[in-house]
Image (cartoon, rainbow, N blue to C red; front, top):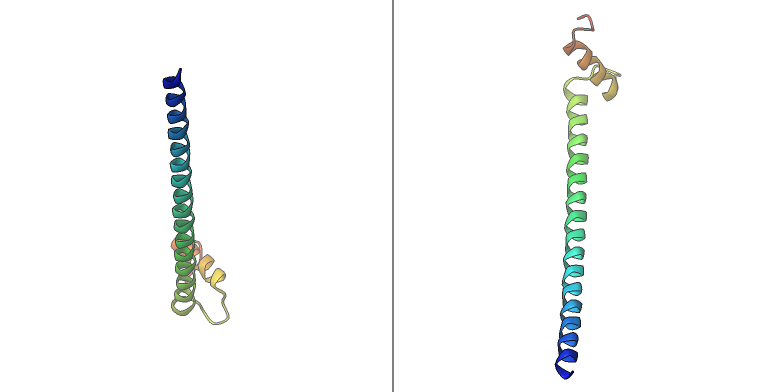
Length: 84
């Protein structure tokens, strides 16, 4: 009878350890994913800002917005707009 109680206690202890380790790994996983998403978002935002500035400085006509320039350039590449 004593041996069964010891086995049960050991199993319960191991289960608690297992649960704690799994929970720890889940928290680490969430932290890594959250960190990656922040880095990814920052990189995309940075690229978009640089891209907008390049379009503005290199391709925009006077008084033309970045969006208007994008539309004009995409139209030119598709052969939709006549050349000046």
